[in-house]
Length: 321
Image (cartoon, rainbow, N blue to C red; front, side, top):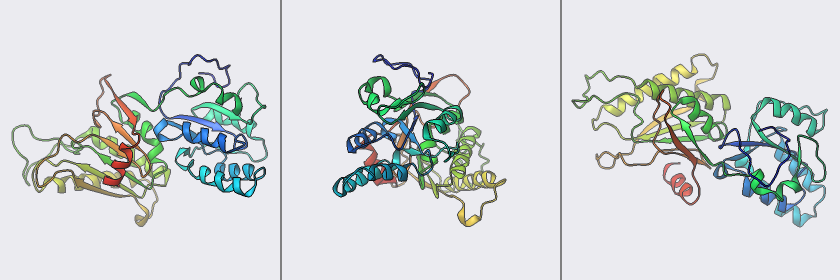
């Protein structure tokens, strides 16, 4: 996809079908109807996000709307603007305040995986679409992108989970099979058993934590899984988690009091193993469903990962966060 190419009513093929990132000029929305469109089409449940560009994007949006609204409208618009929090994603590209937004946007589209650039109504160039044209061709601009078939690799999982890892204060991984060591085939493990590390899951957890550390928002990372049925096994899991965390922070200068708290919990009820629970990665306001869990494999197989929608999301957040 080339940003800025002419849009037709025919749905075009995108380079990615999940977590699309849009650059939107904070001067583009002119009224509460524009904001309602943004709320409806952007956010985790839609798999579509807005780049926090400039860094005070919401503040600039509020100022632009406030300059042309009366007091009653300002109050209504403020409530709507606050609902956009979960749709904003931090990016690395710096905004040059000496240049207008559309010129900054050229650099943005070069440095980030931007799907579209949207500007004020009636004004556009060959890369920025006017917002009024967007609302008249919704199918072309907003094809479904709330899920995708992903390869079973840590890189693919982390990329899908970045909207959670970069913004949520708490992350919860739920998978009854997410043990960091492999279960012996012919006997139950005991306190003297040497458990073989599951290198795939250890690598994945390390990459999840590393992305969270770089985002500098996550304070707690919790894992819910089903132990192997022995009292000591969950202690082995805690030991493995401690080692993973230590490795993640080994080359980072972060005060121990500010490091992410990593904890583990059992999904088992009254000692009975729970192996049928669905697999999720949750933030405080969003969640991803991992259809076949967090299996890591070098084969070319894929499985579905998608954003959790209401009312399932609310139920999960109430139970686990």
